Amino acid sequence: MAGNQPQTVHALERGLSVLSAINEFSPASLSMLVDATGLPKATIVRLLHTLRAAGYVERAENKGYRLLPRVRDLFSSLHRESAPTQIIRRMLNDFATVVKWPAEFMVREGATMVIEVSNRDSAPINLRRFEHVRFPLLHSASGIALLAWSKPRLREDIIRSSLLQEKASERADVAKKTRVRISEALARGYGVQDYNTPIEGTRAISVPVFSGDSAIAAMALIFLRDALPQGQVDNVLVPRLREVSAKISLQYSGAQQ
Image 1 (tube, rainbow, N blue to C red):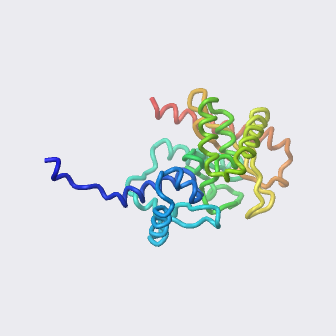
Image 2 (tube, helix red, strand yellow):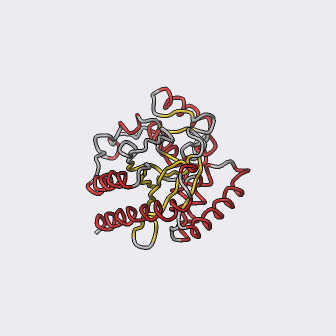
Image 3 (cartoon, rainbow, N blue to C red):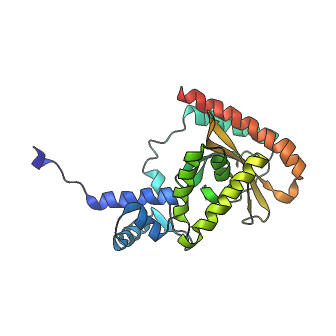
């Protein structure tokens, strides 16, 4: 009988909705979480306090909230590398023997780009630029590469949703700069992002990974800007990066058949 059905635990539902929103917009500000979940601010504050105390969420240096590795423990028994992912890992390890700098296969999760596979540990040049594996889509080489070679309507949808994690007063400026960077990437043939931490002069370049005629992911290569002449980047590194990207695209196409 319907009357004997167990009741849902609304607090759990709310907590999961906050975790989902943080994953979507990481690092997510309090106002972004209110907009994304529709929950009252006071409720979200209490949920964040609980999630932080339980070790699932942390405050990201006054920039918002992000998930901690313990969240992945919730589904670790379900997470196994698929056959295509294992093949991609082997590709990147082989790539590391040819192009000595570290490379990463990046996928989109909401408004961020996440490292799905990396050869940081096998690349001869050990360049650990960051400990975290998630980067704002609008402020990363891989995000710009994915946007540049996405279908126009999807591109605009992604930009619009990603802008929600920017300060309201800065969204118009970020949107303008993002579209300029997309145009530059299309003209250049790859996306670029410079970083000054933890190593000054770190540069990431990225090319899209396609499924059909639209980008679904990206390959990024990390190196020190002053260590390589631009000619070597354009004539050697980028073509090599495109080669491994094309091979990965074939894996995706095969997996979808």
